[in-house]
Image (cartoon, rainbow, N blue to C red; front, side, top):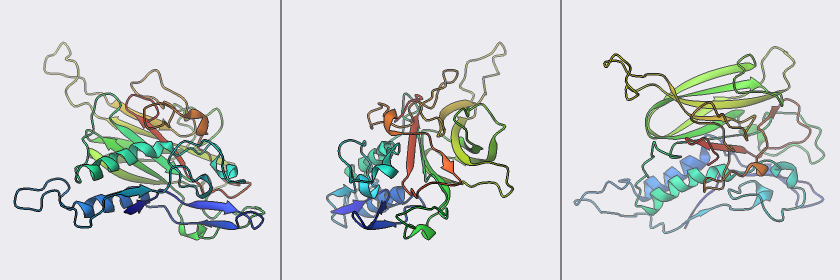
Length: 315
């Protein structure tokens, strides 16, 4: 049996379980750990020929255990937030559902169960997906927290991590913006930094730094949105000139983390619920807006995780 886990943070004082530390989970740890297990277990990635050891499993791994489904106290849960929690852990799990990691889990689990053959990603329906996660304050924030500083915080980064699952190449644009409760996805005046990546079909891992401007502009809170746009491919409807086709960009997915339960009815894809239960059903009550704050009241190194698919709903 092998093991994989997406995150670890606990913040319980000496009067309870006396656990106040984190393990680094940056650099797409969850995705890379899955890839290490799948690709070393099945080094030919499902492409064995007759001359090779077909469907071989040189490491003899029969089971991969995901740690965990519902251990809220250590922040590595991937299931919905339900039932009892360790006393005090609600402080860092409230509004921080992790079910948006389930589509990523399903993708890798399918590869493991099928001899290293990664599943095809469909352009139709809800096949294409964007998953995004980050912490909600700087790793080096100074907080008057009675539990004290979190051991290991010097190891982590102020970064938004993302994974796209796409059927065809596209451009992914991240926008970090000054957040207010009334922020809207069409307002460009509040953008602090923007970065665009060209990505290929399949799974792509992306990262975007997040932080406050060096100049004091009074910004106290940030959030981030990610848009996946695909250039016109010449397959659109023909115009009166038969040699001309519609080449306008198509919005594949849009995830505005500061407004995770909104949808954009004017496009083919909206935010949806930004999080689902793995069956395409939104779980909005466990996902608060992602707000990266300058001056947190308490330490919280848990992950905010969101996902949206190409149907514009939580995945």
